[in-house]
Structure formats: structure tokens, C-alpha cells
Length: 323
Image (cartoon, rainbow, N blue to C red; front, top):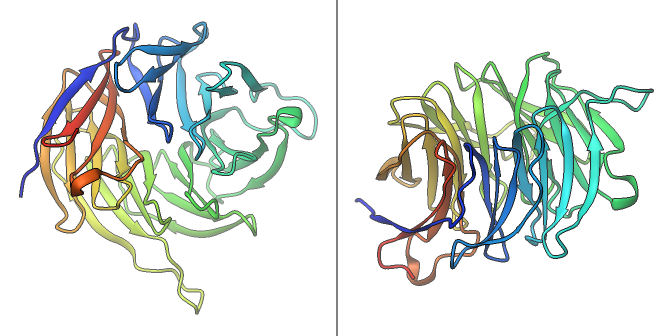
């Protein structure tokens, strides 16, 4: 089986440096962040900029959006975390995580993820732990808890599960740690990869977790826990086919497909039932971020996704035959 994906259109006003994060929202718009320090909100139909903010002095390295698609959380290279209201265009939260002062201080954030309900956000960085912070306007950035991994390895990526019950964190050495949010405890650790894990993606039912690594592989994990309390089946599939680092991944809303963006300048679409790549798209440079359209695909098609990479261009892709 193979699938054809067409370049629907490119953005009208590219970033001036690499796009390091893209997110397709529930409102059918797209948000992107870049090494040029800018964050942009795009109309997915036209590729025109709806809103943007003045460029930050440092690169923006992490991006997440809430379940409603109305707020975007982003983080800069030095650890400035901001919450952007996509409807009003206002910054409604700002936290300088790099400022170390008092008992409530924490490590500078590198990767951040917004609780689907929007009340908290998770952050990870140099110490290899996850810290939970308030995402409320009046107390934004206030540290609520620290989830310790037991390993002092740099936290590369963190991501809340769609049901808000778990947080996954990946490290520079390839470990993936799953935390239980309610108990603020470590649930399990996977050692599936040999090198840094750059990206993580949850299935919409919060049962499966995909990881993308510098070891050129993607691994699908089953995070369900049995009634006995023992971990589930863990790594259930390995997807290999890229010739360089896998930098980004996402799982389609219906759970049928996965995406991967790589330093080998390609995007691959994977059929999760057969564990095979069914489409390979040649891009112009390293593909740093990919994001499926969160709305289920009409007419049982493979749907659409957006990508961002080294050339600063945000690109929309659609399955052949899809509108």
C-alpha cells in the first residue's frame, strides 16, 4: 500500500530562520515558532499570517497548544515561557524560568507542554525532571510540583497525554519516563532508544506513545497498565527507514497513521497497522516539526498535516483525493 500526499500550499510570509515547531489547532489554524524568535498564527486555507508577535531576542524552541485551539504555550532558548491568547492576540502569561531566586525557583525550561484543560503546564530541562506550573493568568509560572526522574540527564521533550493523566518526558540519552499526574509519581521508564529522543506524540486515546530519536528510529509504546499494576507491553513496534536523525513525530487523530520529519530532508507517513512507511515526501531541508490536522479525516482519507523545517517555510500537505 502507498499513499500520495500533495503540497496544498506554502505560507505566504516565511520565517527568516528554521521553523522549530508547528501545531495545527482545533480551530483549523496553525501556529509556528522559529529560530528567528518569532511566533506566527496562520490561516490554514490561505497560508496568510493572522497574527504575529514581535520577534524575541532568542530562538523559540518549544510549542504546544491547548485542546480548544485558543491558546499557545511557547518557550525560548534561555527559558522564557509565555502563554499567547490566539483570539485576542495578547500574552496572558509570562514566566522567566531562568531567574533563580528563593525556594520556589526551578531549572530553566527547555520543553513545555500545556495541560489539555489549560490549568497547568509541564516543563523540563537540564536537570532531567518535570516541573508542573500554574497556567492561570494570576499565578502563571508558579511552581506546583516537581516530578523526579531519578536521572540527571537533560530533558529533551515533554508532553501531556490528551486525557491529562500522564506526562511523558524524553532525555538526551534516549530514556522515556512516564509520570502519573494525579499521584505526581514516576510510573515507568522505557530504554528503547540508543540516542537522544527529540520528539514524542500521544494517540488521541492516550494509550499509545510514539518516540522519535537521533538513532534514526521511531518506537511505538503501549503505556496502559494492567489491573495488577504491572506495566503494559511497552515497546510494541519499531519504525525504521530514515537515513538520519528523526526530529519530529505525530499520530493522526484516528490513530491509523504516524508522521515523521527527519534530518535526512524527508517526511514519512507510516501505517501503524502494518508498521510500514506508505509515503515519503522529499523536502528542501531538515524537517524539525510535523503536526496532523486534529479534525478526523472525511471520506476515510488519510487527512492532512503541516510541516516546518530548515528553510523557514510552513507547508500544508493533503492526501490525494482529500479536500
